[in-house]
Image (cartoon, rainbow, N blue to C red; front, side):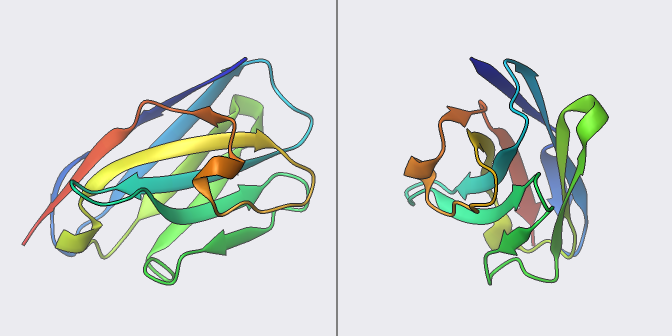
Length: 125
């Protein structure tokens, strides 16, 4: 089993920044894909970004491209999501997810096997 723990959420004004962290523990893979998703009240879970450790490829949702950046510290088994130029519509619970993968970049929630508990991001106008 893999455990994922997110942190770093909070309340920020529009235009501000936050950095989310997702720490993985337990059984680890030699290669994996990590994804961030978000879910606003009354809405479906939405893909934000995916990253695959093998090769370091990433794919971003159009709504966050140029504003959000994913990075990783493999020694710490931690993935980060830098959120810049935040907008009120970015308000949601942000979840990280993981699945064993060598090159595939999953963008659908059902493609992931492991999920964190989520961290709330609230952007005020």
